[in-house]
Image 1 (cartoon, one colour):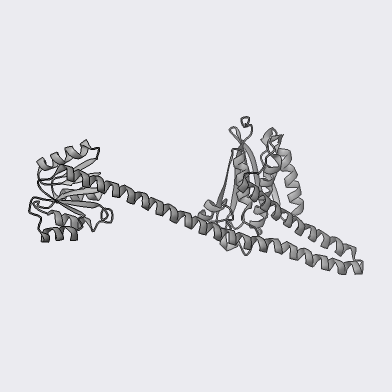
Image 2: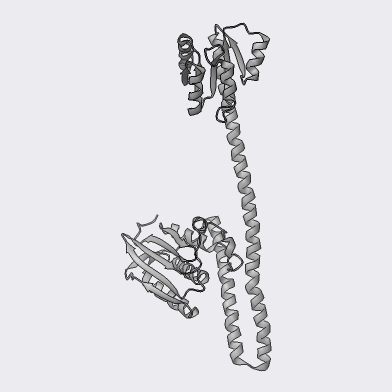
Length: 373
């Protein structure tokens, strides 16, 4: 938009007609004071500013504009009925003007200059947008590189931990074999098996993340009993974690349509996290219920909880809560994979938590979605 500032209505009308005829959007002001009020509220590409006005003259207006962060880059063309002497022209440029035209105005010259300023403005805006886009892209590459390096470091550490444990237990097993201590052998074999299972989960997560990135994470959807699946998972998790009481609330006897194995993966992740992050808690509450046409499932623990800031980021790839990363192992990809699985079931996933009071992770999926293509 162009702002014409002149104390003569006749001058404004003639300039406005020419500019609007050439498809420029025009605003007007009859004094410097009125112009400044408008400049505070609106953005202008160009200001055509009369020098000689009662009250604030054009130079004073230009100097005031240069102090506005919003308008200091706006181009200014000065108009003056006075003879264009060097002193006047110098003051015009020093007060922020980019060009100077004497009255009476040659409309053709003015129009050419306006078009030139507009072209420069458009090119400048395009260049700024390109630079901003490039800066954002560079920052995204830097962040991606940082996350990649961090992930490699974490993955190396997490994979090394069970491997070191397995190696140690095998050495202990060799000593127990020499003593023919069957009970100790049995216990240590069980510990080796636990470490192998941890290793298996880590490798499975790494494979899943790779498949998600390449768009090759496959789903095998069919009708199955959600309740039977849940009872089976709870039985296994309870046996593995006898110190925690897993309480189930609600029931869903009907069959649902989905990938049983993938949904099992999400449920196990929720329960495993609840046990991990609520180590001092004695109970975990599991809820299943119908909400309209959707099945709602949640796992609630009474452990360490997390802040609202962490809740917003917890499903991001590689995100780990800094305060707990040393205390609790993990790659920071389990919940990201869960989110992908639930979204592929046309559902939603989320978390509610209060620090020191525990967390509730939930998902909702359609029980009977429309047939997929």
